[in-house]
Image 1 (tube, rainbow, N blue to C red):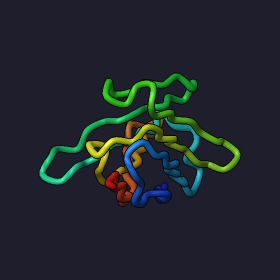
Image 2: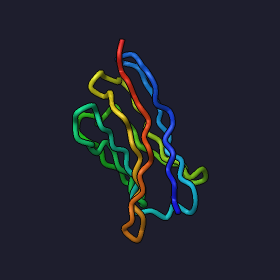
Image 3: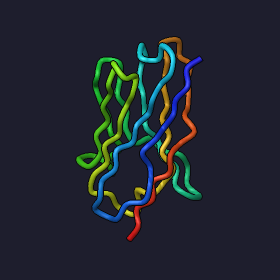
Image 4: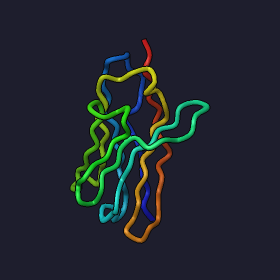
Length: 116
């Protein structure tokens, strides 16, 4: 059973940076893709960034050029480096794994608050 644990959230001022981590337990790194989603208050959960098993990446338009998704296979961890943060980036950020067999696993999320 794969489990995902997100860390790295917190309070940051506009223009600041944070790095989120998603640590996967078990044999989780033969995956199809790992993704970061976010959900702001009273809004639907939205895709932020994806990294595929071949290392290719995709970003939601509003974070392009500001966020970077990456992985460390040795540590079974996926990262989301966030820079030039804006108040509208405030949300709970979730990690999702899409397994080779089509199964999905979600983490419990980490809160990012961008405010002065």
